[in-house]
Image (cartoon, rainbow, N blue to C red; front, side, top):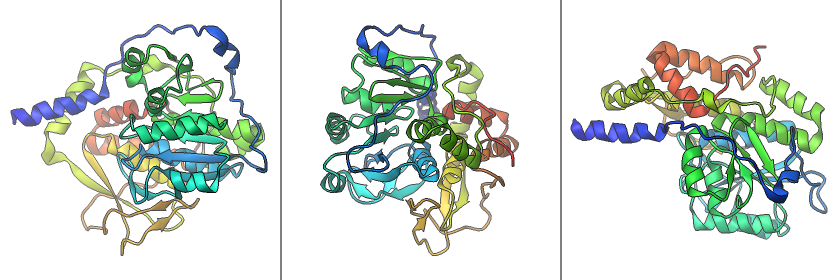
Length: 372
């Protein structure tokens, strides 16, 4: 039991504690490159009517929502060509849940698109210091791509040297560690997303939604972004954010340790998937529940055939449906409504403490969903 409790404490430590960090002023020429409100992007490369956007995953794995939300939202908008790309062939285990197949490997992409991508979206990665990721991103940046990190995808960019002498942000729990590890970057609080020249970064997991809409607006204008936001159920996508709202208390830490230690209360829950499934809604349900410290989310389909999501992402089911498992609730209405609905269901099933841990993990500012 002592070993179990120590392991639980180590896992709970990944929540981290928010240590107040005074906002740092940017210095040098980078100041002039920061848009005060929305994002600015260059025109698509020669021969392209729309920008080519890559959502990137290392074969070792990437974060579920960081990867799936930009893919789904940008596809939904219709303003860009969007491809999922991985460093190697085969299935990718997104964390904490979902298995997917990318459209191309980085090598295949390079052969097909020698001019490179217009925009590359970098989720948090299981191996943020992957030399292959770093080399490929540096090569794409040299070809003029705008690089966008989601959440702790900032670790990947920092490791690749793309945040040197720039301003950037990341998940609230990573700010202190990254400030220490990469002091040549000005780490910014209290903004959902930050642009410094050809590099854009965001705060925690749920910031993938507003950041994706901000990209739509930068590409095609306010009306296109508003129409997309209306369809997915989001009211606004501005930069306003309060980092200090996200702090782990002693009670949070104790609850996380106790939940992890009480392994007999853990359960696998099902997220059924079918062709045409809304990948944004699915990712939000799966990611939310996986952060309860009690739940393993299992995607299921009879026969285990691969699923093609609403916008063409290939998702591989984890298992056949199993009688007696709890099935994640699906909230009617737009995709973004899944967060609040599933947090409410989690609170009812596991208690409000579990829902609070999920909010902290997602760095979620409720309410953003619009009931329809």
